[in-house]
Structures are given as C-alpha cells and as structure tokens.
Length: 173
Image (tube, rainbow, N blue to C red):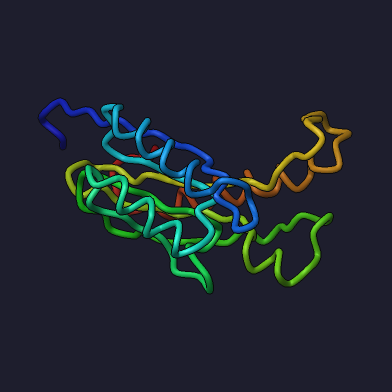
C-alpha cells in the first residue's frame, strides 16, 4: 500500500511533425521552448514521425533525459513518444486493428497507423498511456459520422489494452 502522498504532472501534445509538414524545425523549437518553461514531469507527444524529429526534440528537451517509444521503420511507431524526468520502462505497444478507410496506401499505413504506447514511470505506481486516435477530418462526432464506428472500435481497443497494461501495476493515467 502506498503510504506517502505524491504528485505528477503529465502533459500531452500533438506536435504535427509529419515529414512533409511546413516549418517542422521551427515548430519543434517553439514547442520545446514552451514546454521547457512548464513544470512537467512526463510528456506524451504524438505525430513524432521520424528519428530526426526524435533527435531534435531530445536535444531541445534536455530536462527530460528519459524517453520511450516503439521503434518503427523511419521513427516511432504511431508517432508516439513519451519523455520524462524520471526513468521509464516500456509496458507495451499496441497498434490499433482499425484503420482509416480513407487512407489505403502502404506509405500511409507505415507512417500513420495509430496505436497505444504504455510506459511505467519508475518513481510512481502508475502506467502512463500515450495514444493517437485516427483523425476526424470533418469534425462530426455524431453517430452519423463516417468516422464514428472506427473511433468506437479504437476506444474499445484502448480500454482493453489499458487494462492489460495495468494488470500488474497500481495506477493508470
């Protein structure tokens, strides 16, 4: 049983660091400067697609000496990476079974297949989940949306995998 009070600050951000995006270097520099000003313990980032972006963010976010991601072909799988002030242990990575019906190219699937990254923060009794659901391009969150069923399935998968990730741990964020 945990006998002391503890606290942890977790921040999540979609960096939009896609390889063909505009001003990636400037955007990552601005993101790093702003995040460095905040009192954050664990940082979940999404859309960190390439190892070049991992290197650049690692260089700029020196106050987060620990990072965890699942290695992919050109960068972290699903573009998910977690940075921390505390040592991290990867609990697991899971790629969603559902895929956007609108995107069918192999290139897109390799780079943007969405998933879940679970990490254990060594100083705390918890698992932190980093995920990125497929985009809702039309902003319609109703049951009539063409994305509704896909999001429902991804959320079911997230719930199931989260339970598996925390089976032997004390908490979940």
